Length: 494
Ligand SMILES: Cc1cc2nc3c(=O)[nH]c(=O)nc-3n(C[C@H](O)[C@H](O)[C@H](O)COP(=O)(O)OP(=O)(O)OC[C@H]3O[C@@H](n4cnc5c(N)ncnc54)[C@H](O)[C@@H]3O)c2cc1C
Image (cartoon, helix red, strand yellow):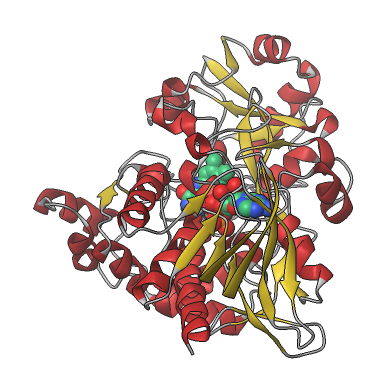
């Protein structure tokens, strides 16, 4: 792109899942499409490239078979037994439950009712899904090759379709005329600034999770120094540029998705790491543990719901502890149940000891506090069967503690004892822009749509508040990315 000004029908800013779905949909609708991406080509893909699955509604396991290449009847039967269905009502209820009823109902209606259609659309584009039966994962089916596979296939498809993708090109400002009609963007390339003029623009350049100044400003104390699970590129200038022209901020700007990660989580991760067997930092066996802080005290109900509905709020609880760290404590039974297999595979940072005192000393926890907490916890466990099924609660709970545990309460009494050190890792931010749900067109604070401007992915606000249901970000990105791309093409070609 050597000219100082370039022209296109539909401009997509950001090459994550939302952006690439928008580009595919706009191209499908007959528009000439151009993509700008801040990352260099070798690190393309966004956070989307680091993912595993999408959460969508399906009536029964028969809905999943057509998503797989050569589905094996035995695999379909295992799915039928483990996670037989998630109908639209359940998907709606899960999201309303974790967001405390704050998810925008009109947006959520589109998200839920379009989820399976969008998955079928992706299938038609050449993607496939594979089943997963790990003991602690709440995802029965994920993308073939994970988000990395999905993204690389989409890039290949767009290249085949002749869609230009300009890397190392970062949106700086949104251009508009005296009628507030968006006419394109100003972007920074390695060779200086360029104006890309477009009949319609889709902003899909992620949240502000990679920007410490914005994290401190919107999320508050301590969030500036938190480590990221994802790419360093989502620094929020898409949001800032949109707010600067009067786009309506929407959803929860003070909360985010943040989950328990190994204490050695690096400060960020890059998509290329996926191609070379990336380390797995997630520490999601916590529902079967007690989590304690450096004083040996519990600070959260580790399992008020199934893992998929709690993990995104656990990072915040850990960050609030002394030093912003915590420890997941297990006894021999967790290992016997296979709940720590994923930790072994990932070489999780932790310690093992024949005594609780010894474990506390190894991990740097106050031994008196840990021993007392464990004694009280064991004594408070109520009778009843334990069933550590990641898809169902078991009501194996405690009673009488200052903070009770609602499910999966496994006593901690049989050595060896194991403890794993964890920290908060931020995944993405929830604050975004208000859109018209059927078109993903961005709304102005003056109460009307901004002509020719659309958004999708983490830039779209209003779906997630405080917490989130696993697999929803990629699903929303695909659904609203497709809608935004189609709407932008219609606007551009009209
Ligand atoms: C480790 C990890 C695992 C996850 N696992 C899952 C999962 O299994 N399922 C799930 O649903 N969600 C998961 N998520 C969340 C998921 O990644 C997001 O919900 C989803 O990727 C959002 O898509 P997006 O397209 O909005 O953002 P991204 O995929 O992050 O894409 C944004 C793109 O915009 C580019 N960009 C940023 N600023 C600019 C600019 N100024 N100009 C041009 N380009 C710009 C970025 O480089 C990036 O490529 C996970 C996240 C992480 C970090």
